[in-house]
Length: 582
Image (tube, rainbow, N blue to C red; front, side, top):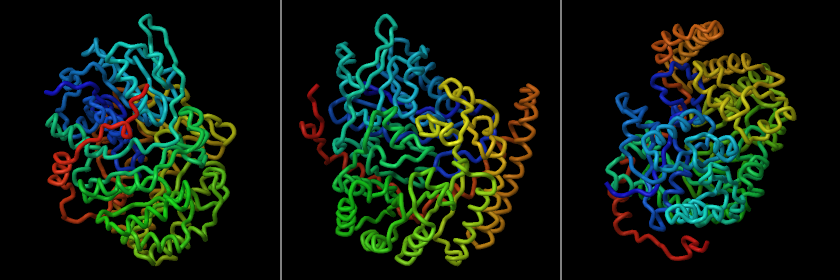
């Protein structure tokens, strides 16, 4: 096996979730991963690609997926067989607070001479707590850590002074915690995030291990990929860790860094040589200046990409822009998250002020100009949102289906902030300002909450308008109502709707039983409910299925093209690719 300089591990939400009895609830119905949250952040592949470009050997291991894929997979034995002087573990989303720490403990147990470094949004937010865990040696802060990681690798391998590495939090030889200057926050990011999917393919060949790099369950059949248009955001959505004030607080990013249209287009083109799966363009392409969007669409029009491109709209797109998009990318997909039908709830929660009429005009234009799908997402647990407001949003969804005559290219979704309101978000940092109450505040409190037997008790917040009990109840009620409406307008079959409603009712009954036993401290009886929990957990939500774009029976992964790219593509190592200056 080739020598590896850095092994990057992605943990499940709870270790070992296969043994811990849990009722997951609808915590992942609106994302592509399962409730185990096996999808690793794109930062792992971006860091891996950047380091490989300058000669370091890295390896990504998705432990969460391997444990989910194979009930017999022994994660601890696998970790014990790995070999590297340095292990990196992501704690990007707070949902991995339990699993990431437990995996770090296993690495320390079996590799006492190796070092462990953490990174990601939540690592940055909780770096002061995280560094105190015995299994954690370093924490790399920030949202753009590729270059600091290169500097760290150079210093680490030469046993040089770590105090010169920007953004690093570390323990010296005496166990004292040191915080280096948080000075690396690049305004330009053209040097990163490019061609990292090819790097992952290279690792599959090097380590003969496809299972460890699969991003999420079902990806081999549905190989969706993502292209990021920026780091940071100019909006300040109160529930988002990537919000403007959140990024300024824990990532030291005062303003967004936008990628150029050339970078975005090249990423899309490179991905299209590897897979025919959908490509999600993350972030509204109009942000950072309208000229960038027009240039990108012009490039896409000249070079037809066969993949379905999925675009985001932060604000309603005018019909003229929708037409331009349709001409450049026929069959495009469009999604928007207005979060509520109520403009006041939306204005305070998102910091954006637009009318429902403007959004409806956008939907109409997208359907008229041939969008393959239009997705609208609403959220539960927002500012000034009570039960009536939540259910009124469902009524508004029915109004949309009436207006657009049940168009099957219109997809409507409702979910809650789950399992946590994101640490670092404005509402987490200033809950009283937005009518929130935090139920878990520290890293350790979140870590312990994740292992509780029901999703209800993992929730880390309630609001002035909805208690935690009410959030869980109205979430189930709203989802049930939406399913009935979708069946009424032919969005889903009646059989599928009935199955989903049965799942919800079973979950509601089981939830009440778990709470009764938990309050009484009868943990053995909760464990005995494991088969019933697994039955409910194992039923795929219709919302999860609706997220997938049909890609037919054509070759989804273009193995030959990927191999050809790796064989004939010369990796650039000149100074313009990676700044080698310290």
